[in-house]
Image (cartoon, rainbow, N blue to C red; front, side, top):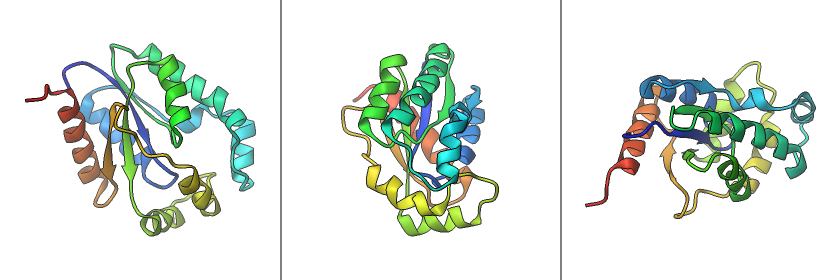
Amino acid sequence: MNTPHVVVVMGVAGTGKTTIGPLLAARLGVPYAEGDDFHPQSNIAKMSAGTPLTDDDRWPWLDAIGDWAQGRAGLGGVVSCSALKRSYRDRLRAVAPGVIFVHLTGDRALIEDRMSHRQGHFMPTALLDSQFATLQPLEPDEAGVAVSVTGSPEEITGRAATALTSLSEPAP
């Protein structure tokens, strides 16, 4: 990528945002921020109890992530954030207009399998259906790329980096 962008690694729970985000940041030579760290404790308690967050719960979280991204404008960075709805991505762009999205995609069975094997995360597998029901994939007018989560973390990261490079290249 020619300019240091801030990349938001997005997708439903279990797609590997927390795994791919740091790998992508290292590959791009920029800092990584874990989106879950921006949640207030009340949000973590709700999710841990299996209760989906409301939009009102999410606004302060999205604003905090947007503030971080705006602070990295021109410097580059990678942050993980589910960003499932267009309105959430619009909220992030309102604070940090230059963000680019990497949407990690995969089928429900693969993602559920991965979620069932992870340890120590507050998001239960029971909320996966609500995540898929909420998901609004990137639209053509949104700066970003969709990347399949099949394969190893290194393969996924490589595909993401290549896709990001193609975003910044001028059209022929």
